[in-house]
Figure 1 (cartoon, rainbow, N blue to C red):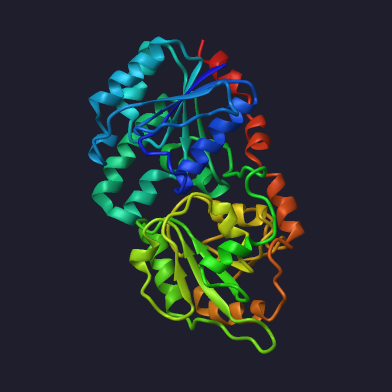
Figure 2 (figure 1 turned 180 degrees about the vertical axis):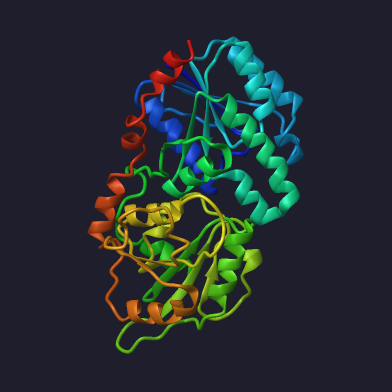
Length: 367
């Protein structure tokens, strides 16, 4: 099949969870033999050498306002659809007007890949007015689409309540060929000043308010953590804007944005996810489990992930986080030793998840 995937967000570097979902689906569909074109606001030199049927084209970004209307996107989308596509997959609802109009003109079935119930997420993050604006775009997308995909059962229920529409479930996944267990890189540990130390890792993008709030909570704890007979545990913060958000202090190290997040995950003795707000399901937990790591999360942070409580994911409310962390740090916590978590993550590989959906049916049902 000839598949077009559109997004209002930059995809490279792959530092945002949203980008990793979009690219994970694209790589998997190309891996299944479909011809996939990404339409993105990136101007990026990228060689998809491993995927002969994966390509991308770009359009000029006009910032956040351009998510709703962008003539450059309109023209690029027109050219892409004129070239012939069997289905178009829209990431996020913001570009609903040009997508619904042009897909109807060219008789291309449209699929909405909902990373969240975006209207609800924006209402919580940006206020009621923004939530209403996004809700109108999302309602238009839902009503015009051949199918809606969502990441969790809770999001399914939210779409039913808000739009009287039950989406199909396509959970967040992981590339288990890239995120793998392995020994920590000793040279990297030395560069970070962590040789002989244990590592508690929190990673994400810190221009995102829920991640900044979670980081603030972690910084309120005592670092380094000291356990009798065990090496000190230092807090490692990895991701875009992490250095700007992290004060210089003993026991805490921030790296900024990195090219290879998997090698940093492999450094960890424990991965921390102290989130209490945000949207979607946390790719960081799935990626940590794929690397065989133990995770300590809030219940909100692990929301939407089924059957992970016995796979090395420990959950407690923030008020109990410090005590739970102390308890876990009393264990050996060897990096990459969580075999149960790795086994769970293998069932969440993007190739496996996308194979559960009959993409050709969307095209056939539109005729």
